[in-house]
Image (spheres, rainbow, N blue to C red):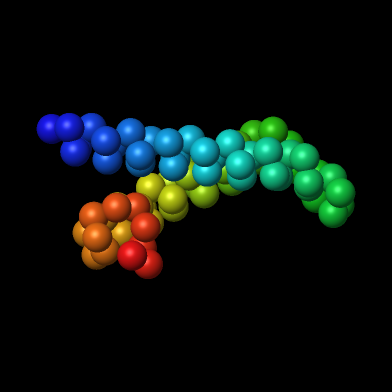
Length: 72
């Protein structure tokens, strides 16, 4: 049970951090390169990135050493 809780905590952290990093990158760096995305579109794009991060971590846990890292 402890391992499952640790894995879920790790997965949740990866998801939240991917969302936050993607959202902030779009909102802050977008105008610098002429890409003025509104907040809802930035949130949608960040949400897609977070879902892809979760899917990658799930696949990596089945293929690799059981962690969220796909290359180990």
